[in-house]
Length: 115
Image (cartoon, rainbow, N blue to C red):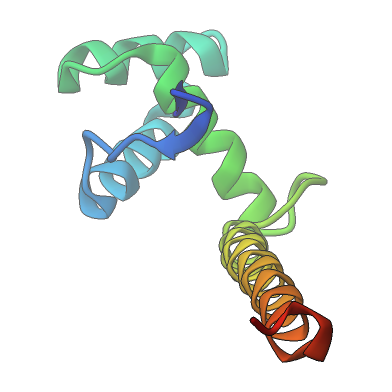
């Protein structure tokens, strides 16, 4: 989940560890045929594990993408995109600092500005 605080975007820490996610997805897959629909299986498993059904549904959809069963951005690709965006932001900040420093040193080295 992403939140905005004072103009900055923060990713909230996950409430569930990867093992819990994998277990929940596996349980839905294993017991899907015991229910009239996938949603019924999801709600049953989510109640049993004490989590939000929509959260579990999202994990299942993401797992389907990761397995190649559904179109979308894989978890691995999404992580790489996040890392690249973070790196890009760092580089943009570095560029701004270097521009300011260059401007400062150009003014300082200008003989007309010496007193």
